[in-house]
Length: 353
Image (cartoon, rainbow, N blue to C red; front, side, top):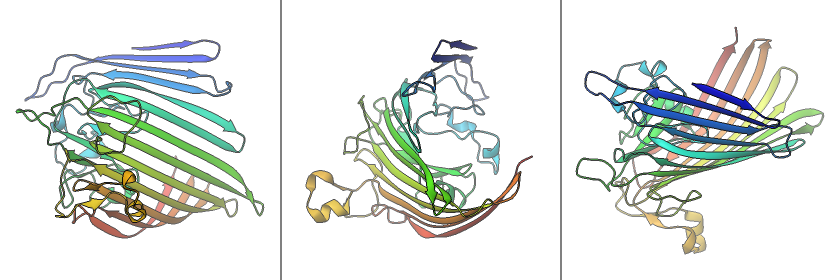
């Protein structure tokens, strides 16, 4: 069911659903899905967007617009199956606006228009409805497309069998050691997000240019907290920054520069690496002797980076050519085999019909 109500400067939309999943092995009871979206009009000084949702673990949809975390076996290891069936996730840390079943919570976004500078920020708080498997996962924000092209639509690959490829993306599984006797996590997981993005456009030497900035901070922990946390109490914390610069060379051609960096940290309740020596979570602060700003860990200590150069060329009204040359790095000093770096060249043709 879908309900819609419009007031003078407020738009509200609610979606209600009831679902039941059954296969030859598993049979679930009926489960509910409730999604509420409230937006203020763009004419308001600071437009707001409030989103609330609750999706039962029994509400499973393998082709819908939310992520399935309940029925992990629904994704068989068949080549190409990921093009038609949505990949299941192990308690994923996701960005704002991505509903997940067995989860409830809300987020709020605000827009600020300063002419050529446009800002958007949001914060979200979510929690599991029922305890789940002793795992969680996170979607890489940097180098995700590059990693996904190494092994297309594959599960449990990489030197530690932790990577999983989706369409133009990769997520990584994390094992949790604090478990019950039946293999479930000994707690409900809580998730927090903060996102901020900025867009700016102007002219230089008579040519239009555009700058895009996006920063994201996500965390998963054992308790409810108003904001993401980075310290050792977070099971996983993820911080990323991405910057894109676009310069119009002429009416058909644009120069593209890209930069991205991502840091993922785990704590002692998650996977321990194969490096026998603990490593610093921040070598810069370590050199400065700022002990309150770093720690030593045997768990995940990932750093991903991307530096890219490219061109967009408009062939016709409905056709574009995209060229990218990227230098990428995916490393973790605690997981010695996670040491991937190199160059990638991409030539892509897009035609709209």
